[in-house]
Image 1 (cartoon, protein in one colour):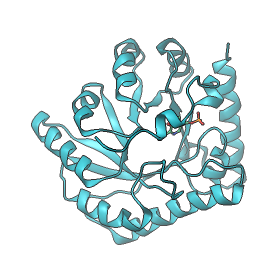
Image 2: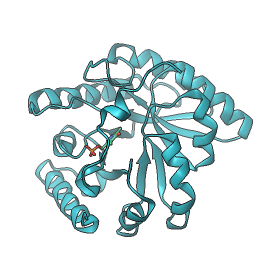
Image 3: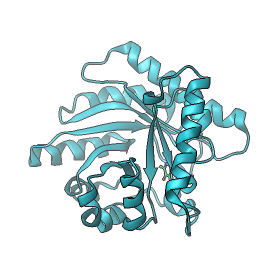
Image 4: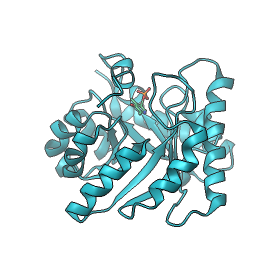
Length: 244
Ligand SMILES: *Cc1c(COP(=O)(O)O)cnc(C)c1O
C-alpha cells in the first residue's frame, strides 16, 4: 500500500528545493498527477491533499472515473493519444485542457465538435522531442507550422507545449529533450502569433522532473512517484497503433 500523502509531500519538497536552487518562484511549477491505472479512491486522497490537477491517458479510464471523482472537483487535463472518434467523450468529462494535440486533423475535428457544442478548449501542442518512433507528438521541425495552422481555429486556445521526452538514465540526453522544448517555446513566443499564448511548458515525470524544472517546466506530470508502480508497462500507453 503506497502512502500517497507522504509521497506527495516528498515530491512537493523536492519541487520547492529545486525551484529555490534555480531561482524560480515555487508557484511557477504545478504538480500534475498522472492517474492512469489509479483508482478513484486513491486519486481522491491526492486531490484532498491539495493536488487537484489530474490527467488520464485513455479516454476509457477518464470516463470510468469521471463520476466518482466529480465531488472532489478535480481539474482534468488529458495527456494521451486522442483518437478523433473519442473527442465527444473527452468533452463530456469536463476536461479543461488537452495537452496532447499533435496533428491538424485532430485539431480540426476538435474545432468542429466545439462549435457544435458551443464550447472552447485550452490545448497544448505535443512535440516529439526524443525522435522515437514509439512516441506521439509533432516533429520539432513541423511544430511552428502546426501551431500557426491551429491558431486559425477559434475554439482552440493554445496555451503551451508538452513533451514526453526520452526514457533514459543519460541525464544529458534527457535534458536535451527539455531544452529543445523550451527553445521552441521561446521561438513561438517571439513570433507573437495571434491568439497563441505560451504560458505552460508541460514536461518531466517521476524520474526526471527536477531536470525538467531546471529547464523551465511549469507543469510536471508525476504518476509512479505518487501512486506506486503500475501493473501495465508504459508501452501499453505509448506504443499503441497510430492508425485510427
Ligand atoms: C504516465 C505518464 C506520466 C507520468 O509518468 P510516471 O513515470 O509514472 O511519473 C507523464 N506523462 C504522461 C503522458 C504519462 O502518460
